[in-house]
Amino acid sequence: MEKFTKVKKAQETQVQTDKDSIVYDGYIKVIKQDDWEFTVENDCVVCLIYIKDEGYVVMRSEPIPPWSHKYKNNTQKLSGYFLTLVSGTIEDGETPQGCLRRELYEEAGIVMSEFKQLEIEGPFFQSKGTSSQYYTCLLELNYNEYKLVTAPGDGSKTEQMSKTLKISVADLDNIRVNDMISKYLIEKLKNEYNL
Image 1 (cartoon, helix red, strand yellow):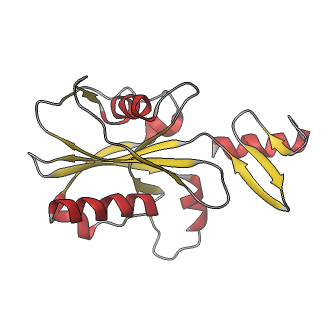
Image 2: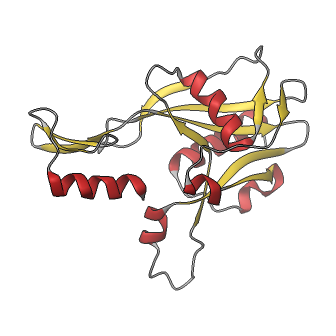
């Protein structure tokens, strides 16, 4: 929600940084090119963590305003929380691997062994309406490859309201998956491990 509020403020002042930019607020840029409008944002890393020895995956429950907005009139009274993956925006000068290590610590309290290699796929475009791309990771962790600490978060209000969840692999077919990238990595996990 915070980033869209910034866009609204930028629209009111019509901040422009180059001839193609319609709106830019320091976070999201809206570009018009070839009669097409799209957003320009940083790329992201998304990860499904599989703790194989204990038979669970690590996911996130986060308050996501677009989710709440989309289902605000739903008679089933869906929760305002969105089940998703550990993820994060790649900061300037950061590698996808560096971003993933940082997000594992901030969101899940997982401190990776420096010897653990991270296999990351991508990049894949998030949608045709943005230049932002996903780097994906299905991360199997064994007991000697990480340690658990208290997740510090990133200091944002959304992060404070979010929760990291352990979900048994036996329950994967019973959860409501809310986005395509989560669905993709869960299906990949099931296929690779015959779950």
